Length: 288
Image (cartoon, rainbow, N blue to C red; front, side, top):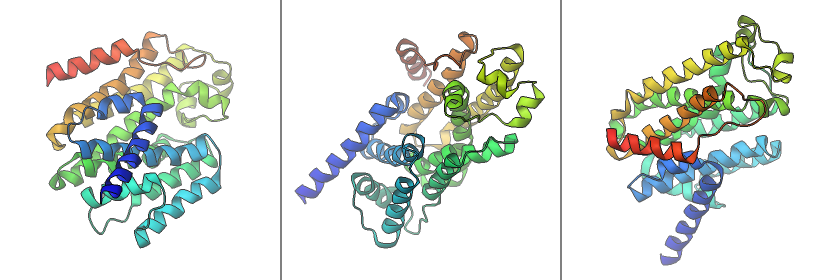
């Protein structure tokens, strides 16, 4: 029994290391959770999402992606776990998820990465939002079992979808320059046409009035989604409200940072300063 506890703590610590190294914003936000198991469970879900995402974004390896799908199927059918992430997730599933859970968001995330591997620029905003669900909305659904009371779960899934859209669109706006280097444009073709922005303009790094208007259409959509999700924050566990608000405001600040730097997303990735992050968190505590 003692060995099992020690192994479990080692597994959770490995998950914690992944979130600390790869998402300081999420770690800063959800590290504020007072409940230790809630906090560790967030780290475990993040670790799963990180390795699935990296299998394509970093390694471009469909076989590696398939290996995580195989591990998920193996766990679902037999309960057998063979690595630190799935051993950690086993604790999460047994403590938070219904017994008949079918793991749809976990499979959808894998499908979202397959779409990234066979990347096609979205034609319409609807296409973009479908993609946002597969790579971000599903993450909100995974976390909703941990962060909300059972009786609110159906409503919370909707909030998770809204917040996932907001965060993913924020990522897309921040990473326009980096994505171009990988041959990817996530901005829908019909929005580019509407605002008179050509692919050649993006590749040349032209920050024109047309580009700013295009940026703003997506930024305003994301901001509205942040506002909608924040207006329903009381659906979550009381202990989770400040971390969720912190994650939302910290992420939304990325858009404000880009605006302050005159929409320059081509030459470098815009990040929120450590001082500004601390100020935002303090303000959230003050308002709460």
